[in-house]
Length: 115
Image (cartoon, rainbow, N blue to C red; front, side):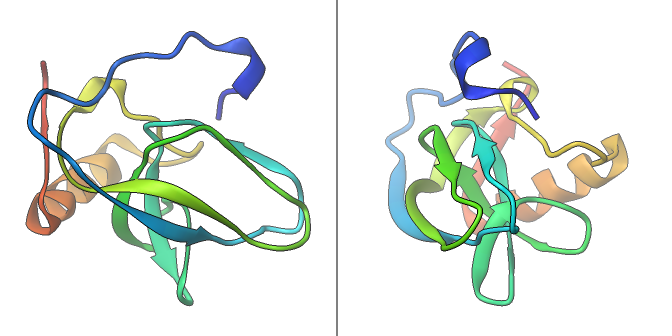
């Protein structure tokens, strides 16, 4: 994952009107920066950076720092048109897993295209 302080924000949302919702991001026990555009998954009722052990759920709409202890609420896109190459994925998520996650997101109302 990239660090909040050292990246250039990229446009990933297209012009279709999005629907946002506050979601609970679970702490992992260490402080963790998540960038706007991060694909989120759901496990045990809490969201986090998507991994293959999670159910893909939405896309983070803002930069956040998840504290080492305690969870945090953040805005996420629940319905949107996005640019797939601009999305942020957790380290270790393979291209095959990304493709499957994008297909699942389409079923939830998040439509990803190449441009």
